[in-house]
Length: 303
Image (cartoon, rainbow, N blue to C red; front, side):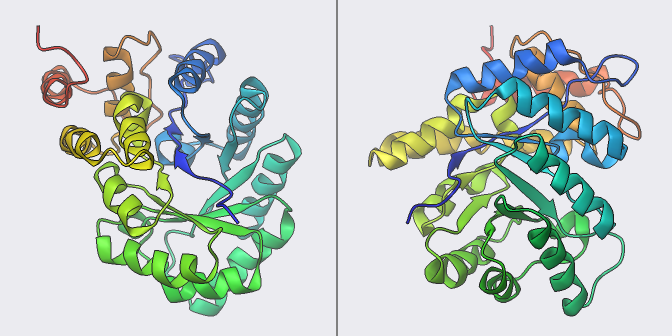
């Protein structure tokens, strides 16, 4: 049985106006651009979607608009994670109600949870919906790793837990997740969260990536994925070498969503680059650094 989700799925930036409200026109432009490039799905309200700076009502507004606007052209995943189990359940049920194809749930950040409590947290969410649940492992921000052995327990108990986004810089972690979990459940999707782990994730038997650079350079990750599927390894390697430059831009600021939005604008998609506090506009010197990185990656011409 094939994985429920696979390929290149961007964690779409939420386009906002200067008052911090959802910019529906700009959001539609970005969605259309990404679908036209051939992405395999869209994730809304991930880290790049600024979910952590939004109220529950704002998150629901984005989820409802995005799902309706995509209109089943590609699969839609909605990020519904929270430090609060009740809130995560509310958002997950809402995502299902508005027609999302799946949800992405980051583990609670702030309290490190006992294994029993985090199992119950994910179990309560999985049981609250009938659509597929993707786990979101980002130990650098949550402070708590979702280990392959832990994930295997979850998938054993809850059949709609269908995959994981592995935002970890450890290739060994991704390898073990694929061997232990996907080895037992072949339809379990394993995605790299970091851009430059796409190719090794595919070589290890994983399913693709959910990485921020797809917002502004979809052709690189899509090219790697397609070349890999076609056995064109020389092409995949050349694109991988271009992709390797892009993680440098995430070091320009934190949170880096302002950098991603500026890269979208530099790419010629005329959308607002406003970000929600505590994120702030990218300063002019860093914009110049961003341009240089994009030029090295071949995303912008150097002329």
